[in-house]
Length: 387
Ligand SMILES: Cc1ncc(COP(=O)(O)O)c(C=O)c1O
Image 1 (cartoon, rainbow, N blue to C red):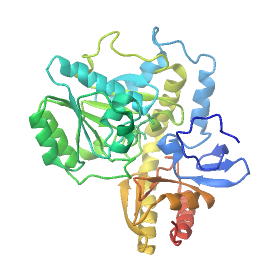
Image 2: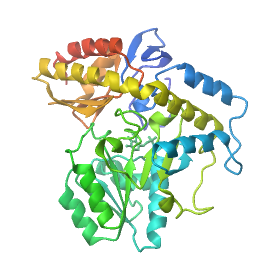
Image 3: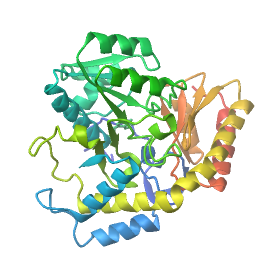
Image 4: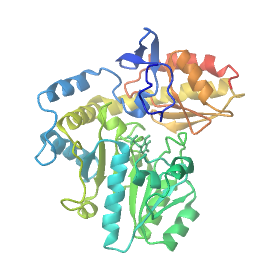
């Protein structure tokens, strides 16, 4: 059977996509799908976008030389991200987990001279599958099979300031690692004021604030970075997913006063920041700057309104709608996986997150026609009783 030679860490749908164009996908049977997942938030410009194609073509003559030498597009992408983030410096990796791993290492290195080691993160948070990122991941089911994990990690409930303050008072905390919206947990949006309060408590305790923008960053919520919506500024942030428009990349950005804790030889990556990934990253930044961010802001209310309308039409199954920009969850009163599977059969790509949530992360190029088509399919799917 196809795929038998693969290690079984994924439960895959029996669908093989072979072609994409914008928000459209086709499988190997010629069936059409509307893509409202964008490769879990990574294919930010949709499929086969001319800007990504041009960057890939330009890269073909020189893909990779390693970080032993200067890499023009890496420096250019760092400059652009620095300008957008208020002067942060960048380290490039190849995934979200690696970006967080770099952030954790930076926090430990920074904390070492200050006698601070603990990394605090939040229940149900998700930061990746490598051992360090996993130690910070707040979902016990992901962590426990791989224990013992690196020591010095604590988790507190999301949206619970008192619990955070307690740990900050008890332990020599190096950093607090937080998502502005918990994506994998099911698009959990914290109460207004939570993130500013986290930032304030973290700073008051003398620890670093690390914001994981792997899912929320690069225009997803209608801002370059989700923290801009909250009026907080992190010391360190991590990016991946949408930054590469479908090409693997990760980035850890830090204020220079913090970044200087890492010295030559402290960290590295053979592929991180190579010509290919960073040229594509530049194309994504260019698109967001010239048209993308405006487009996200223009189209997001339509997506929100369509989902709110669906919730109103199906109160017997939908408990609520939550999200921001082009990152949304429909909260069901029952397991969402059968609904995601039925949507796929009906030609709509979405996924189940957090048990009872249908998550939508469309490509940022999504338009009103696609949102209308998604609404019609979900209307049919939500009318069914599925188990
Ligand atoms: C907030 C967040 N951080 C980190 C990760 C891990 O990223 P990757 O799968 O690229 O390692 C994810 C992936 O879903 C994520 O949503």
